[in-house]
Image (tube, rainbow, N blue to C red; front, side):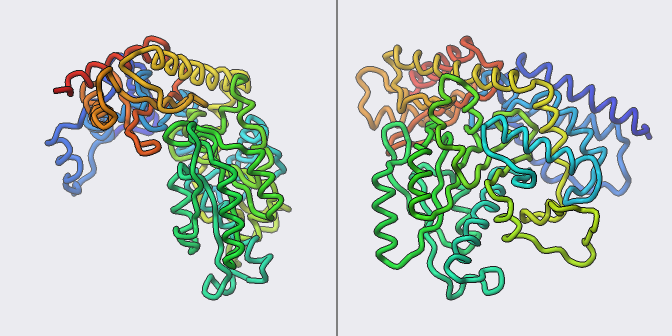
Length: 472
């Protein structure tokens, strides 16, 4: 059996070869049906396989069928092309393999720096302990909404940690109709209930309509409910719209509500000077969720929550049983006191490495390159009679429709929705479809700085060809 050095050398060679060859192959190809069955149904071996056989099987049967998100012509969802420094650091983190709930080892101290660096990149006020890395923005949102719930019910004289929610005042949260699904999941899981997530309509760009929000809050107060949370979006899923943060922050301050910003995908767009003005007021939020594994190009599995007041998190989540007491933990205590997870993987290494390898200027240049290419795609769409822009390009998501001359809106809906799967199957580009304001759209998400003018031109040609083939 190969020793650790040989195994890891082979794994590094396979990983490097995979990354180096991505742009030369199809963006995506489906896993053959027989292989799907084989991967899912394989029997547990009685005897262990040789490590080289294990790696050969993974290279042949798994890495050969990637999602496609490392390819510069991948425009689907919000899945990053991982930065090589982040990939390498993820391997080192796995080799270290501590629990990062707390203790005195390198990762817990490095996490302080990684979180602070993220706060500095987006201009969010930060004190030590006022943030942590999570499994993703969905978990970060659950933690933030939990803290908001704790604060609101404490102000109403209710101890939710002791008594639960039975008999508690009815809380109401607010967002736009484009608010991310993780917000709904959070209010459901925390016992608030999805019927108490009240959504305001959006304007033509996908941004929340503030007047409608004000009316909803007033109506809920009149009905005896307790408004407690406003969620603003820094880059909605469908169109990449940025909500009016300054206005939302002012409403939250006037009404005594917690203001949370979902910046999972688009929060880092503030680094592009051309669109930074759209983010005015984000720094006024009580909490901000981001996903380093999106636009920061960190390997998947890392989110980040930043909060204005670290005490709110500790009051919500801190519980230290006798076996975890640590007199050396210091004033800040353990990370497990600030969120849900007890055992936490060492997430800081790939985050730190992906930022350190580029610095502020390099990260900003990558963000700016993506947003600039997205604006170019938007301009190409507007100039082409076969396409129409579904919303202004605000960040690096371009929402558009295949609507050739003479097609009725319903026919354009059918062609738009169907063309996404056809483009994916062809393998030269990858795009997904969605809906916005009742109409089918194609949404091109650009978070790979290597995506260039040639790639976006190719995308439009692929959509045009697929759409034309679908016409009667």
